[in-house]
Length: 156
Ligand code: INI
Image (cartoon, rainbow, N blue to C red):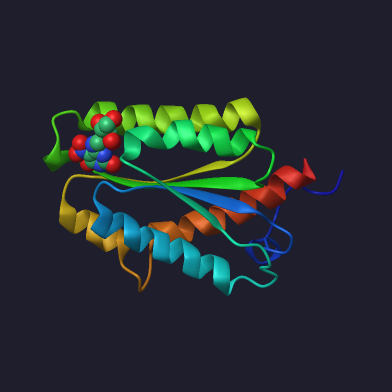
C-alpha cells in the first residue's frame, strides 16, 4: 500500500464528486460559508463535476440529509454547513450536540467523509469572523478537508 499521507496539493478535485448540505438558519452566515466552499471548489485544479447543494431548515436537520447523501454512493465526500449561536437559543447544546453526533455517525456508518463545517459560537461577531470571505472562511476550509479526506480514503 502506498503511504496514506496526502499533501494538500495532491488533494486535487480531479474526478471528485462532493455534495454540500447547508442550513438556512442564520442564513447571513451560512450563505457566506457556502460561497467560501464553492470558491475553494472552483479554485481547485481538475474540477469537472458540479457541486450538489441541498438546503435544510436548520443545523438539526443536517445529519439526516448528510447520511442520505453519504449512503448514496455518488459522492466522495459530503460537507455540512451551518451556524449555531449560543446567544440565540437555550437549546444550543441540543442543536449543536446532536448535529455533531449525527454527522459523525453518518460518516462512520457509510465510510464516506462527512465534514463538520458547522460554526458553534457564542456570538454573531465570532460567526462573522469565521465566515469572512477574505481568509479563514470555514466553508473554504471544509472543502479543503473534504478533498483531502477523499484522497486519504481512496488510498486506504
Ligand atoms: N438552527 C441552527 O442552524 N442554528 C441555530 O442557532 C438554531 N437555534 O438558535 O435554535 C437552530 N435552530 C433550528 C433547528 O436547527 C431546527 O431547524 C428546528 O429545531 C426544527 O427541527
